[in-house]
Image (cartoon, rainbow, N blue to C red):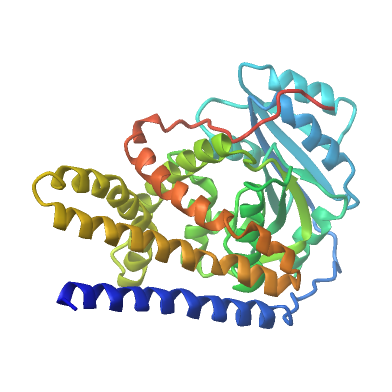
Length: 386
C-alpha cells in the first residue's frame, strides 16, 4: 500500500468518525434539550406599545398584516404604518385603517427600512417599541406575549416565526429555528417581530442608523450585544411569515441575505479579538463557496497535464462534500430527538442540499454586491387580501 493510499484510508476513517460522532451528540443534545422549559412572564402591567410597520410596495401583503393586528387581544397599543412605493401602498393602508383610532398612516420616504422606522419612532408614544414587518400575520395573543418579558428585566425580545406555507424548502427555516432557539437557547433578534424598550433606543443614540440599508435586524442585534442588555426569545409570541418555499425563491432570498450579511459583518467589525474571530467565522462560508467554484476549474485544467494530481484533488473535493453533508445531517437528528418525532428524518436531504446551495449563493452574492438596494423583499403573493 502506497503512502497516498494510506493517507486516503486514514482520511476516510477520520471523515466517518467526524460524521458519526456529531450524529450521536445531536441525538443526545436534542433529547436533553426537551426537558428545558422557557421562563414564563405573566403580564402584570399594561405598558403603552407603539407598533411600527414599514411598508414599501407592500400592497399585496399588507392587508393580512393589518387584519391580524386588528385582532390582537392586547389593546394598549398604537400602530404606526410608514407606507410608500409605486403600488399606492400609502393609500391602501389609509383605506384599511380608516375610522380605527389605533392606527396612523404616514408616508414613507425612499431610503430604506431604518429611515422609515425613524419617522415612525419620532411620533410614537409607547414605552415599548415593536418593529413588525409588513409580511407578518400575528396571532391574537402575540403582542401580550412578546412584550411581557420587557415588563420584567429584559430589554429586547423577538417572537416565534412560522413559515407559511410549509414545503420541503421552507421546512429548513423551521429546523433552523428549533436548532438555534429551542436547542441552543439563542436570543439573537431576527427580523419580522422585535420588541424594544424605548430606553434602549435612547442608549443606541436615539435612532436607527439610516446608513444601514441591509441587514437591519442583524445590525440591531450586534449593537445590543455590545450594550450587553438582556434579550429573550418568546415561543408564545407566534406569527406567520412567507419564507421562501421553492428553490428559485430560496436562491434569490439567500443571495440577497448573503449580500446583506457580508456588508453587515464588515460594518460591525471591531478590533477586539473575540469579535474579530466571530466576524471571520461569519465570512468563512464565502471562502468555502469560492473554493467550491474555483477547485473544479483547477481540476479540469490540470487533468491534461497532471491527471494523477487532478484525480487526487477531485477525490479530496468529493470527500469534503461527503463530510460537510454528513455533518449537516445532524440537524435533522437533533430536531427529531427534541420533538420526539422521528418523521423529521424524511427531510434528511434538506439541510445538506440547502447548505451546498447556500455556499454557491455566497459566491453569487460577492459578485453582485453592487445590486444592494435600500428596498428589497423576499417572496410576496400576487393577490391582495384584506
